[in-house]
Length: 296
Image (tube, rainbow, N blue to C red; front, side, top):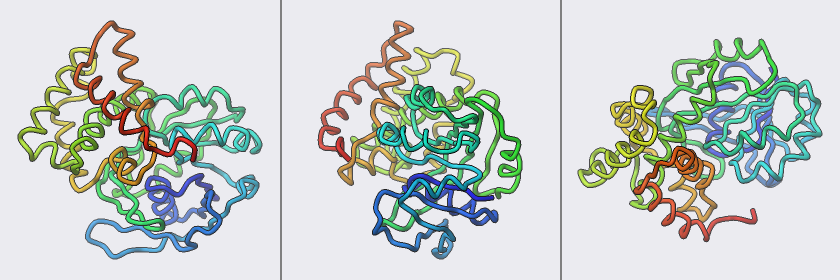
């Protein structure tokens, strides 16, 4: 199957690497025409492997794809709207952004079939052409609109290091991931620590538990859907990972603040609930975010 991937960030490279392993032909669409033509993945306790793929900078090449995965960050989606609408309407699109704000963006697209993914892997870019896979987690996939029966073949052909699960309620999975990101990303960014430090450091663990408790008070129906043990397990499974928000801050990029933290705060406000700790972190991170790449 011919699969195009828009964006060669950490998650885009991760998808490309494992889909290539599964026998699919991968083409990356990137902005920089001078990007290194060799891309690699580093898995836990394994040597670096080259990702078998093509790299292009013209979206017209993707008109021959069987599936296109949109792997750019939310704040870059607006720039892609016209290009995505120029693609043949029959080609299914899979969006794998963090947060919740991209759901509104999808309403502007004309494609017959649009899918959404919620990715719970730990991954980071070691350099411009190498992704490190730091923690295994499932990828939940659901339909925003349309249907595409070939998704079953893709899900079944992936291995235990890159599990994929079809779900009839993808929005619930997105909310769950946004909540997890709200618990982990802001604190790791402000403290400049890896995920494991949130449970290994006594002070950070107290803050993390307090954030979890206030979130469950605001969203009571989530107490059984998102347990404290799951939060701890995610910190453990992605222990060496530096959260995407922290990596963005360290590299001078705009952080995905509004689509993750802002979206959960907004949902709490609609319930007439407050999240004092998360709100304080949001304000602090907003100031830090002013140095990011608003114009990139």
